[in-house]
Image (cartoon, chains in turn green, purple):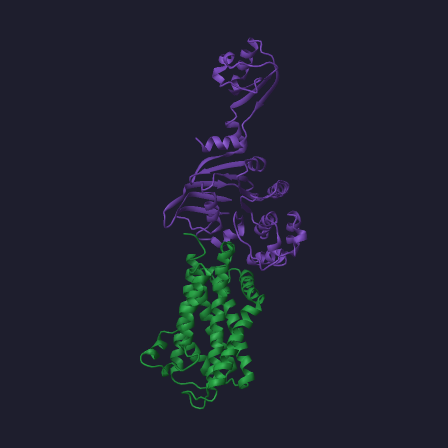
Length: 259
Length: 301
């Protein structure tokens, strides 16, 4: 593995392209998910506004806001690198990546940070849009930002892995519909997992979305319990693991070089 | 400048051998034609240099750096113009070239980009979206893209395929100037006259092996020991009367034209034989083989 900044200008250019790419089509990449999240908030939040959740003194609307911000960040962060790589495969420009004198670590980081930026942007805009419904309720703004950043980084890493391994949009859609969306729904975005019947609550132990949503909710509400440290630990392990996996796939040329 | 030793490539999973022990050394400043039929292994070789295909065996060094252990250094030295590629349609020509410069760690090279665009007759398309370029313009854009980092070696994979004749000649002039400025060039092409006009060395690859590698002039000289001699007479010829020239494979064309295949050293003897028969010819042409003839005779051996 090469040193981090072999080519700083190259890294910044690649990161800039990854950001510019989605900023050129803001209706699809920013506004679309934002409207979905506002609709979720309007429908679920409006209907269940007064319903109490398991956290003392918190109503359903307050419970829902950090969940929606996390979900918006997760999908946006995942889609940015995966869509970028798969569209380059589709356009037959993927070989360009191999021609740049940019280290694999820099390339991975550029794709992941591009996705992270988009995730955080969608997460923050989702939060900003909820102010109309719920006001400026944010206990720890900086920690909220860090939590959204960590969530986005993790799912941008997953998105990079998916973009390298998968070779067409149909497979990516399948992954989003069959794996990521159910995990988001069962990750505590809309309801408390502990209230599910039978063995279903156990799904939180294998769901990478659960600890991240829980951490974001904790810093949003300012209510921490003992499990937060475990969740931070699990999130850290997942972030490091997924990042290293993405860099390793780049190193091996999976999906971008012919064997 | 480029050193390839015992390079092999077997594609998985069908174990198709595309390159079989290729060894090739290209010196600084050479203009080399890499010729071969479709599927001969040319594009695989170029894709290995570009880092798009992983080699199975062998060693490749670009500017003294191994593509395995010093891949990033090699990318600054080489520029590749791919045969078949897509385009990032999000950006204009200028934006794409600025980005390409950025990937190579270069900033503030607007003047050089303008020079490239002017040399490749793309100045008026500077701010056009790549989507709006014609096929020939896209090829020229790819050349500009491969040159933004001023590579010492430029590899062009069939750069003139599908380009009209006038623009092809414009590209030839550009490549000649680039070569004269010191750039080492490797060109693959199906237009043999292109190789004959531009290159000073010819490498022929067939079924993954190099079957000829010589300076162009020497290759032509070696194959020019035998020439075609064409006599034009002002009377009709009868093949039965030409038996005295059987050693030279006589062929009568258009009743009055006689073609012979003759070793250069035997030319005086042929003239003597014809003179003894009092066959006065009105015109004479001696044809050396072209690179195309040589290429065809080598690959059909």
